[in-house]
Length: 568
Image 1 (cartoon, rainbow, N blue to C red):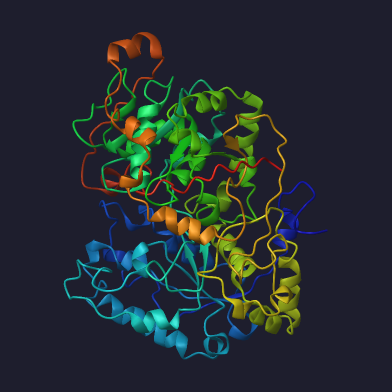
Image 2 (tube, rainbow, N blue to C red; image 1 turned 45 degrees about the vertical axis):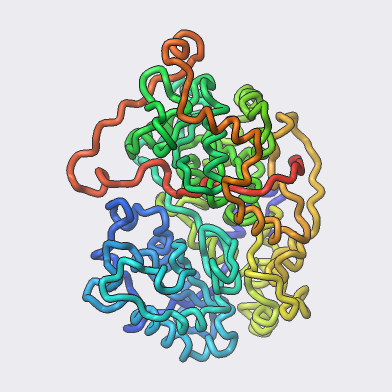
């Protein structure tokens, strides 16, 4: 029996027998969680564990007692470096550890200790894994920690040591300015939800789910194409029945959300209101922003809302564990094209909202089955495990796997891994195509659906899925982008767009943002919902200060090419 069962899901008994041995560094030169965590807070005052970029904390917590952990480096396939960089680079710690040591001295001490080991020397760190969701990892002084009260030190040694590493990050797009490591795997954001509410158990058709589409996030004039896109989307969905589509930052004198007005309006930034509305929503509308990914994806999964991904490039750079998770069976991908038109996207969303309850309920069940595969902060989470599996499947170069295959136990691990991928994974993982890694790559490839992707970033085979369900013309199950050469150039061109590049159709919609239809008309005819009344947070605790709006200023974003793909 293979680990990928016949219905395309993971065969759990076979996975339970899988062994992927990893070595976790420890000792005086490595942070055991005490260097920065006791004195670090999230950006908005929440506990550091609640910060959306704190996957590193859960990653190391889950691995310390994991059954795959080995104490002998010679028997390991992967080597995990314990680092709490997001924790270390919060403004609250002011550039130092809790005992006052400069953060870069500690990071360099870790790098020096790793560099001195035999296992590092053997592969120059190509089999070493770090999880760091903070964008600050990629930056150099003076941008990395401008709030440091002890100034900043060069980080060139740290960057050099881990130049070949595998890094878990919330997106895999990296270039000379945004990353220095060789290969990336997507590391989920930490979800913002109320675990005690168990909202994911509330069926899509339940009366309690009285919100059709939900979005709340930033949409100010920050000069990016993505935020201009959000402004236009808010205007297009003005008056959408039972929807709550708002922003906590809008340009000009935007109308506030209030009773009878729940779309195209300015909302407060309340954590409790955000969680409540997400739990009431049928669809979690993930609109692109200045970054292709968003915490909202995980917030919605945690609350049982169906994901509607409006981010053409998200499949390339921001969906985690593509070969392990049946994304096409649990999320809708809405092409950006209708939002860029003069007619807007409201009609497309109405068609989506009218899909049969049986179809929607089936998708919710699939998503619920994979909660522990995607959410760091749920009981039984195996996100850390999935990160290691994906690192081995997508990022180990052939010279590493060839050497490992000479050892009996590691050879068995490689054989098991080669049977692990029931779903095609078309994400970009490598920092750049590297022809030197391609020689003999076929002997080291572990993901048969993507023969060279983990060492030659743009050589995935073209996708040829065919449609098998009747859905709106702009809705697809899967990656809407062509999967061929030029993907990196396409992504880079999109990310460089500014709001001055917004087409005329979008500019016309932007003029209407924050100007909802009259509340009296809405109450009489539009079917809008009443707002959850959010009380002002009290006290100074973590719950009172926690960030609302699902985090991440990047909702999703990308170039439009009009390619439509169906479900296979």
